[in-house]
Length: 226
Image 1: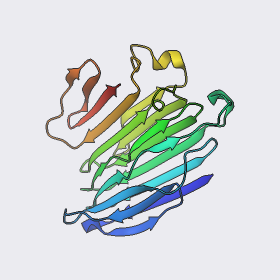
Image 2: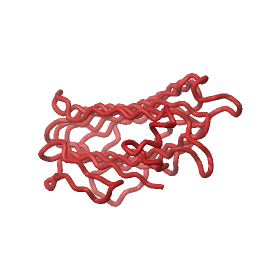
Image 3: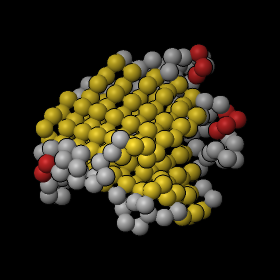
Image 4: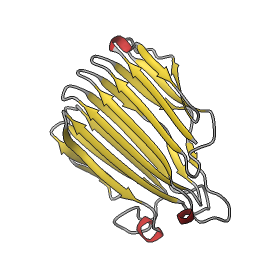
């Protein structure tokens, strides 16, 4: 399956453009915050499935303010009896652009990597110096009592055209998934990027929960959960 979805939020929280193709279905929902557009990812079809090519484009124009949430988790499914390495990888590509004085708070929901799945998750963000962003990404490595499939997670974040964060997480090999320096056998990986904050600092909350300062006003928090 090939699906393309796009949302554009203009100044004042006005939705200037909204187009969706399943399974990446976007709906505007109610919010009490004035001048902000609340968008929600709604499950409308299974996916990503082996070989799927899914892309979400989200543009917050100058002075625009938006939030992105999800009604539930997405499930990257495999095929019984077929190993992850034998499948064509599904691609889930998200591209975000934030203009001057724009803001976005996003939690697009967890992605569950089922046994037999093979998926490449890519996130590209381009923002201006005056934009503010919170982006939260959650991977769940397999359902209860099952091993995880294959997954990679790649982030490429630019601010005013210069690299702010480039990160690649390869979870295709079982020995890497269980390695102490990677997941320490935890099944849930949550990564949260915050840009445009006043209290950016490095904090070790616990051995499996660390906030790293990556710029004067930006942090990356990585949390591992059982």
